[in-house]
Amino acid sequence: MKRLLHLSLALLGGGLALLLAAVAWHNWGDLLTSPASVPPLAATPETLERGAYLVRAGNCMACHTARGGAPLAGGRAIDTPFGAVYSSNLTPDDATGLGQWSTQDFWRALHHGRSRGGRLLAPAFPYEHTSVITREDSDAMWAWLQRQPAVRQPQAPHTLTWPLGTQAALAVWRTLFFAPQPFAADPQQSAEWNRGAYLVQGLGHCAACHSPRNALGASAGVANLSGGLMPVVNWYAPNLHSDRETGLASTPLPEIVQLLQTGRNAHASVNGPMVEVVQHSLQHLHAADLQAMAVYLQSRAQPSSAAQAAPAPKPAPVRASVAERGRRVYDRHCATCHGEQGLGVPGAYPALAGNRAVLLSDPTNLVQNVLYGGYAPVTAGHPRPFGMPPFVLELEDRDIAAVLTHLRTALQSPSNQAAEVTPLQVNRIRAETTQ
Image (spheres, rainbow, N blue to C red):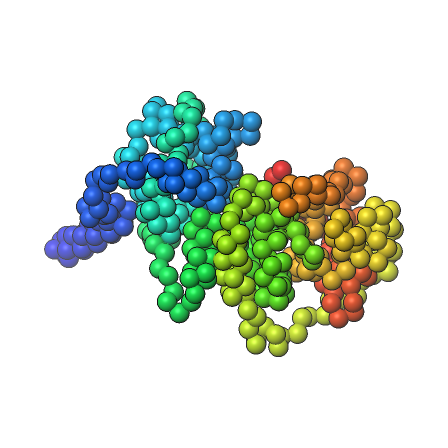
């Protein structure tokens, strides 16, 4: 009996040792196979210009700049369901930034999600996407960052729920959900398509928002753009594979490019977290890169025959009292800009009739717009966008639910209607949203 017990304990200990070794190899094994240092890329004017462009394409400034703080000095709180992660200082300060880092350290942070010295980074930093970036682009970004003004700003400690922020927990999470994904061009596709894929999957990190996440915060992969509710900020990122939700498959490429570059086109406008992406990143990209992204996104959004054949479920009839309340609220607060029939004003106020954003099965974004206002990005191609005021203090949940139901039913054709919005849905979204 004792021998059996000892054998069982030995097997258990051996299995645990193998498991720990596998976790360690997965997270730090590259240290044994990659060079300790690599000569930095020559900081030519062309390299620095390229680096600046790539940093902007990745929208690094947005997360690594606290509100009112020095550019790229970090300190912005990235809220997650597990607590806040504070962005790091990317300026070349020796004590609190990247001044003591090498180009190899920076590459390991992007490609392996590890800080200088081997510390594992929290996945609020989207290293699943930055692992796609090529070494040449990483080195160009590094060269430009090293030429920026050094700012001394220590990083605030993360407030992740224990033990989720510990190195042991991060090692297990990464073993389950992360592996570096260097970009591999698809030989069956054009150079333009591959450039778009590289930007969308890597620097653009589109799936960081447009991909569903599991209970542990892991996304469905850099190429999965099937949409989902963004935690904490509580916005629904549309399914970019679905023409019904986005129109990407049926919209002409120039209009997709216009939306990415200016934040609006003749049929759609961006709102919510996408406003910041357009304003600080996409509008500054080269026309050829925007075209490449549009080509890639449109190719991913081709509707399947099954999706085309599946009829949308017919929504339940709206109660007369709700319909009347919604009509009154619309006439009082909305019709002046959007028109009595919801047709909008071209170039100013969007049409609500037939609007895909109005007809989404998830009404979260509509509720957010009514509660907190709708504001398009200020861009060179659209410098004076019209906005919508917030009604969070003016309309109660029943009024918001009724007017949104009016938008989704009375302003739509009988064959193109969405389900009623309930006061309970509005109340939940109001309570769960962090502004």
